Amino acid sequence: MRTEPALLPTKANHTVTNQAMAGWDASLSLNFAKRADQTILARRQHRGPLVVQKMLYPEGSDLAHGVIVHPPGGVAGGDKLQLSTQMQPHTAALLTTPGATKWYKSAGRQASQHINFSLKTASLLEWLPQENIVFDAAEVRLETQVQLCESAVFAGWEVVCLGRQASGEYWHQGRFQQRLQIKRDKRLIWNESAVIRPSSRVRMALAGLDSRPVFGSFVVAAGEVPSDVLQACRDIVPKRSADYGVSALPEVFTARYMGVCAQDAKHYFDGLWQVLRPWYAARPAIRPRIWAT
Image (cartoon, rainbow, N blue to C red; front, side):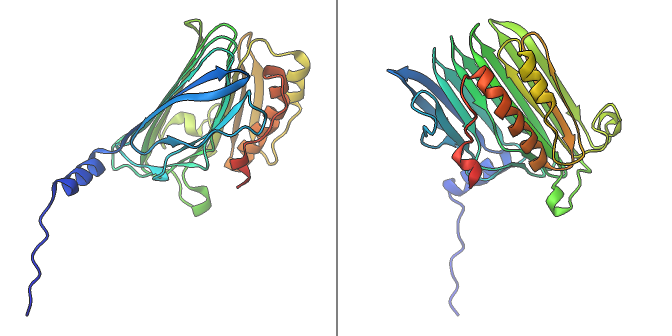
């Protein structure tokens, strides 16, 4: 009888095993600049499994569409994603994701996403990702920092689904943390944060999520919203029963959604975007091509 020699561990095997235990540390840095009348991706640097696809220009050369891709398809405990974007003067870009971001069961280890956007004079950045799906027993931290010059414009939304509704999985264990800060010329104009556990009072309370598994917010920092635009936003109604609403502060517009379906939340925010974008970007809302696939 022939006996095969045992496979000895190699340095590469140890590296992969240790990396899997520690989690992936992935980062992506983008710098948009103006060349003639075109917004171009002048520089990009990435480490680990976080990349951006080739820029597309479905709206013309002055506004670039980019798709941020995390090839593993999901984020596990210990993973750290970092996205940094610099918008040089008079540039414009829309960034999105190809599909939902899945946050896996983490065995007590936190998975995180840190985003830092910096916008220079008269620049525009739209951050319109697909939804976040938080698996049961996931430990998740989302943090977004936005730095604006005086005339810069930022629009962004986040949709979160606690549990895998389509699979009948509920969120019984874990923790979800979220924070968004927006500063204009180093002055804080928007600050919100949330820490939610399955047992949190805010998750069950009528003044909180009222036991609904899906929630989201849409924020636009572009100055005072015209009254007719605000009224048109208030006239938009989600497809199915949900709690929703819009409000306008002197410097920030915000919309909220709480319901049972992530697709309904995205449809509601898309309707608002159709109304808001001609105001804050002086152009109609053109959906990224990836949304149709």
